[in-house]
Length: 329
Image (tube, rainbow, N blue to C red; front, side):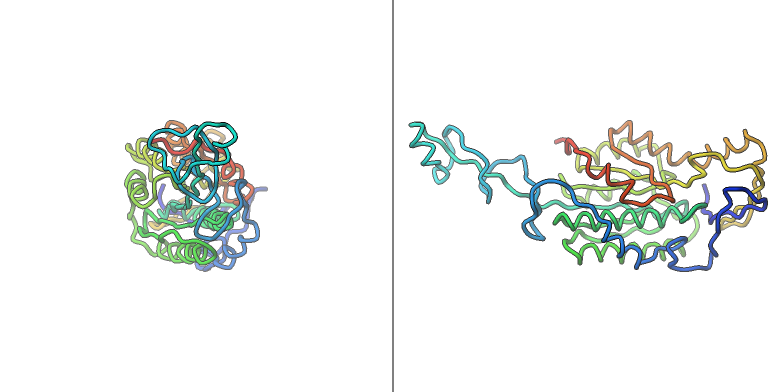
């Protein structure tokens, strides 16, 4: 798909919607609205689990055992155990040497991967896919820092840069500011600037610490032959989830009629007066999303569709709360 702005139907239909002016800026429809991203803080969720103790040390307990702040259990003393960890009370009661094990807290971080390709600047209902992705990223950022974790973001596609993970409100605001800048830069990027998804994932893998979390927000039009293998490798490195922004026209056939589409190369008319034409058009629009969904299934990566009409908390929260087996070593 080439870059597109919301279409304007030249025949009325029950599903006809208001189309914003392409010249509008920061309206939350065609452009990211920073105030709207900040307001999503009130809708941020909170994961279950241990209570967060500080902003820099997350309340997530590692499966590792070693010296740390929280006592985990005692077991029979084994040669090589640190004598300083002897459990004297358990030893006295049982008559056998016991040593204490401690639960180690590890700081968690989240990396959000944002697709800035021109295909994301498309929408026929409520907002562009790019704006829906930015709102989802903002909700993830606020939810992450509310749990005491660090959050960072990486743009790929038309814009290729990143924000290092940071904790607290400052970390979330850094990501939100980057989302606004990247959206503005993507709107003025040269036509044809692209980055294969596999290359973007490899960049993210070098940036994300092993065992951290990552969310990929992409419409799938950047898929390449190596993307499925890259997703599988990334999922072994981090706890990965994927949200696929989709337009309602990718989920169901358009109402009958003739439609005028505008792209960077000009305007063109599409005749969708017949049912086969509407189904074929829907399938063409949905090709990217279906390709990415199939790759996620093949790589055993959890994913969800994020419609441009959806609120991020309603769509992403179930996948956010889903218990993961964690990255494999």
